[in-house]
Image 1 (cartoon, rainbow, N blue to C red):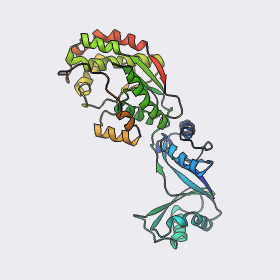
Image 2 (image 1 turned 30 degrees about the horizontal axis):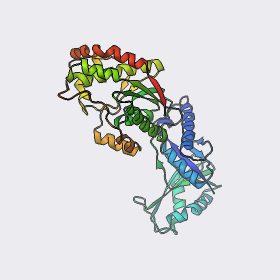
Image 3 (image 1 turned 60 degrees about the horizontal axis):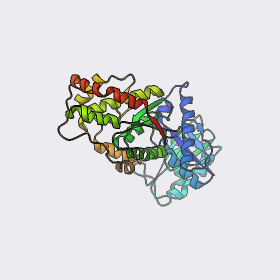
Image 4 (image 1 turned 120 degrees about the vertical axis):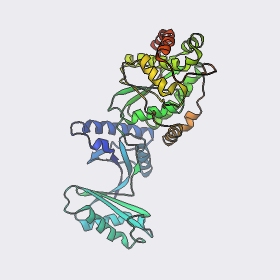
Length: 386
């Protein structure tokens, strides 16, 4: 019996209309093929069969790599290695499943989880009962509540796919179905998590880094960005935009009230990001801000920023409701924490008290001192490949 790569599409894709779903599916397959290349899985282009992806690979090792690639591909609910079984009737199906799964259940409590799609003339319960009977004598008995091993049988027409269960994927939407966005990217922990969350919603994410004090910060941003690209950003070629903001930070030091320096820096970053985003046709700007995490991110300051720097495109904060422990947990889970933790802080605008309740009229006056300098810096951006 043949072993194949087998994956389930995320529920959001399955529920799309007949008009929309094919576009999502095509993009998902393209992204998955790109992920196969990155994870060195030698596999043919998967076919979509009733909300499942089925693909053939050159070896067992390639099948394992394909499953790993799928766990890093948005739009995948779960993936596994499955055996394809052809059958003519229910009894033959059970006997062929036994050839695959008898060794799995040997001396262990087991359960059969059966699904079907079609009009096979029997129910999922019939499949579970018949397969369970065929495997029973090899096992330590049936335990439907807390089995040691589960045997999954998915019947689709005259074929069945038998496996031990799905390895969970990230879900979400295939990258590219929702357009392009720019993420402010320091290379610290918050910004790559924000970029990951944007990509999970089907967005092609590019990164925008500001040099605040030393050009060495670009190397940190590239290192973390490259890790994010290797693991998660499949199906396109992400870019890192770099804006040299050293003249801006120096102007803030010399011209802006010290207690407003941080929030003014945030304001001119937003304006500069808008300049780049509009020039390059992005539909949104993402940031790694979490409400109350630092002084410039208090709700009062975010309100003042919105009043003073009304942007022409959406500014999205996917981490707004998360605390630092939650952000760290996501960073570890998606594999970027270790690289992000190495990133240094290159710029401090000074010491002393900083405002957590900026007054819009005061912020506007301080921001206007720096605005044109920031716009000129943004117009002179350059691009680094990741």
